[in-house]
Image (cartoon, rainbow, N blue to C red; front, side):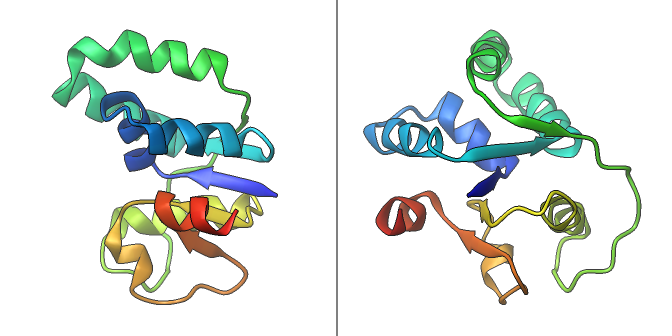
Amino acid sequence: MRIMLDSNILISVIIFKSKQMDNFIKKLKRSTIVLTNIILDETMGVIKRKFPTKVKDYEIFLSELSFENSFIADGEYDYDIRDPHDRKILHSAYSCSVDVLVTGDKDFFEKKYKDLEILSVAQFLEKY
């Protein structure tokens, strides 16, 4: 199974450590984790801006995480979602042919997207 993590999930793993997040990371390791330049850049930007003391923790986490890193060209994408930035995330998920997008962003749960399962961490843990 191919799983993409949204930036809010990566931030939560680093900033809000919990037993639930530890279990989530353990379960992820059975699948192919897919991250893109868009997600990695956004995550680093937020951590530098809001949690500058956690930059090193994020870098260490990424160095220890096995993931497929894909480049997605920046552009305007036409997906039916409120936040224009989220269109880039949907485009990333479809371009990388992921099965599941794990996110905490409620906008993604407003509708169903063809051939893409969108789950929260809790939903992922319950289902898998």
